[in-house]
Structures are given as structure tokens and as C-alpha cells.
Amino acid sequence: MSDEGHILAWRNLEEDSAGFIEGHGDEECRKAAAKAMSLLLQQDRTKKNLMDRLYRGGFSERASEYALQYVMHFGYVDDLRYAQNYISCHKGHRSQKELRYKLLERGVPQEIISEAFLGYEEEEERDALRKVLGKRLKGRHLSGLDYPAREKITAYLVRKGYPLSKVRAVMREWTEEEV
Image (tube, rainbow, N blue to C red; front, side, top):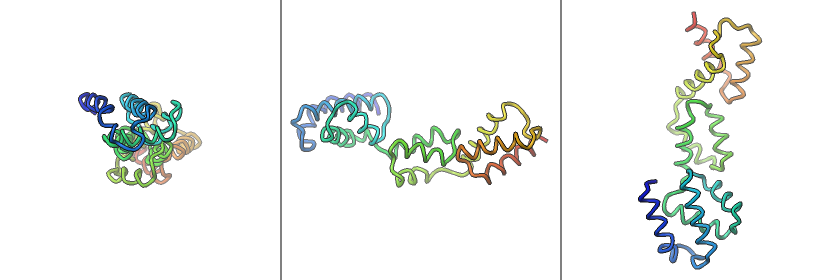
């Protein structure tokens, strides 16, 4: 969101809310919309996160719903955009399974998560797995580790959401590269 867009939305809060949706005359609805705009200035949020924050702020369900509809009208809340940005930022450090879990935890619906993963490639997860493995090795050689130490690293990577078959394949490649 550009600064000009924020300023325009803030200015239009009073002007446009008069005919926006039912409940426009309610002071609580206007305050909830202003609070929603303020929260969105701090960071991008999902619908669920924004609603939760408004509820915690003491706004009624009706006022919170009004505020959500208001900011969605301007395109400031978009769960698909949020999911795509989240995946883009974290795909180099987390497994696809972990990314899905984190997005579900943030209230993004499963259908939207699936749509956001359409551009996600298997090679990106492999690169993330290699990064996490390298970090876990802490400069040691994988080929120099005994069986229990290798299995401990394997178990860690599987718990992080990487498929066992990929973990074993990447560890095999890593060992071959070390030789």
C-alpha cells in the first residue's frame, strides 16, 4: 500500500463510510474501521487476524464485521495475497508442510492455501532442505557422522515437515558432494 493510498483511505473513512454498508451511522463502526486501518498500517493481516484484533480491542461483532468489509472494499485485506507473500518470504527456510500449517494457524482457508502454492516448485523445497541441513550440521561433515547422529538429523528434518524420501535423497547427495 502506498502512502497516498493510506491517506486517501483515511480521508475517505468519514466521506465513504456514510453509504458503505448498513450500520454506517454508528460511531462504534467508524472507530472499528479506523482501528482496522491503523492495524493494517503496521503489517499485513489475514481476515481472521484482523477480526481477532478488533474483538480484543473491545469492538462488537457487528462493528468488527463492518470494519473488515470496509478495509476489504479498498483491497487492504486479501488472504490469497497474504498467503503468497508468506510463502515467498519463508519458502527458503521452511518445508511446504510447515508453511501450510503456519498459514492455517493464521486463519487462511485451505482452498486459498492450495491456490497460493500453485507456483511453488519442488526444487524450492529441496533448496530449503539443503539450507536447513547445512545449518544443522554446523560445519561438520555429514559423512563423518556416526549412524545415531545421522538418524537424529534425519528425524529433526522429518519433524520440520520434509518428506523422509527427500531427506534421505538430499543427505545422500550431500555425502557424495563431500567426497
